Image 1 (cartoon, rainbow, N blue to C red):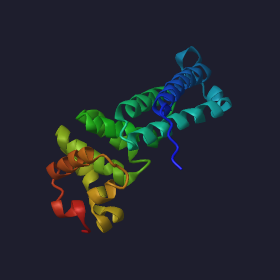
Image 2: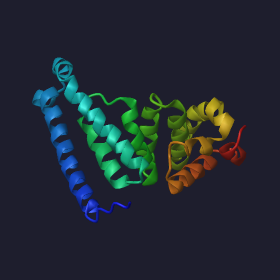
Image 3: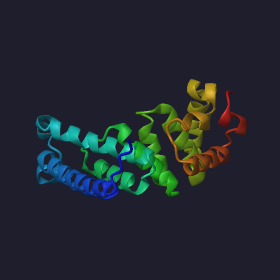
Length: 194
């Protein structure tokens, strides 16, 4: 039996538009609740934790979109979630970091990668090294290259091989490889054990 829903793409587009409208409303509502007068109120944040957790859902949704190659939507969702979150956790920076790298916005990629290291030390350090090299930030390369080369995960499978488990965009992986090469990472360390 074959089930064909010819109008499914249109229905999904409609559902997606409705979801984006709800996310925008959520962000405005959370900001209004925890930033009365424009300044963060810690007691209000404590009282409105459920709403703040809704923002975490929005960040997770952005990551899902990025993994599916929907960069434009993922980046927009990540940016608005970062702006709306009073104290964004480190993992919120993952999509923004990858998008900045994809767009060759090296300084943003460096800063987001450094923030992301608290969520995922290996991936954050690798992106900090690659973006740092592309930005000409030798200080960043020197600070994080030791972490990358000391990573047991990277040592056992190769840096790009391990990154490919989390980053599925081949062009982005290639660009990250270019940055790592510019930073002085040996080619052999990119694809196999070292």
